[in-house]
Image (cartoon, rainbow over all chains, first blue to last red; front, top):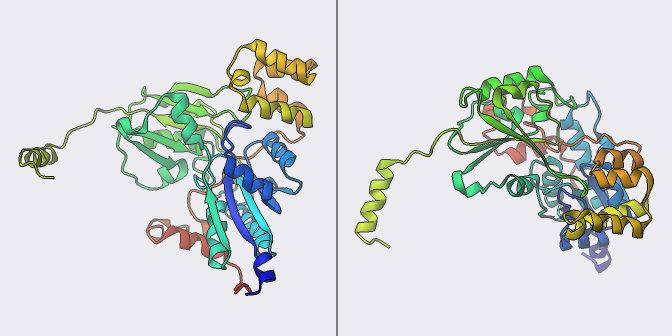
Length: 269
Length: 100
């Protein structure tokens, strides 16, 4: 390949700018934005998009690809194609996504996978995710009881093995039960299905937390505590997460404990 | 607008403004010349009020992941046991690239 061909070869980096404007952007993400030819913005707030436009002269919003009644499956495919068109055109492309670009984010993963499959350099730089903020704001250490994370619709559509002795985090509850992938939100009837599934494992009076991380630095985190059976009538937006504390104590496995004791007594390395 | 973005960026990066006393925030707003309704919204932590004054389209859709691939429905239970990434990328895969 000639030097000129290499010089014009497209590349893709997907970065996260974190959840809160100005607080979470990493130096490497800033650098990728600064040096990009084209920036695609899949962010969570119109003001965050304006913030990006202050950083770079060619920011292209991914927000117009969403539409009521349009399958998000199509939306994400169009996002991937829009990004890849510029990579194929030899541009240095930066995909900027809110939070962490690899967490609950299909288009960044697919864009990178497709770019690599077509022979382009592509990578991801992590960002501060909603999950990271949740641990800080709710005072949860994921190592204390363990954690389970599920996309809410996936959680109810499939038969999952739920461990009520660990934390359970449900993401995208605002869209729970939407099998069309075309709704911009679902209501109480859909949340009732979710609650019914959850009540196979948790009592109705179990306290759950509806959490939202601030996107603007003048806001505080939104932390609402409700009974599980009240979640049906609790409006949950697409940017909120439901955190369910453990409802049962951890139970020791005596067989494993005996094996470990035997190893300890035998002083096995 | 640009000035307000600059102000929010500064608040986001400065703990004394984001988490400090209201006096620090007031001093920063004075320095920026923020007044009127915008100043009231910032002081009250009213993000919706700030959005309403800065952007026309304040409603933003936030979701970057489907719960499953529509291409796999309705037989999603078995199909999802296959490598997910390959299944999901396939519908989007473009014609062979001319890049060598």
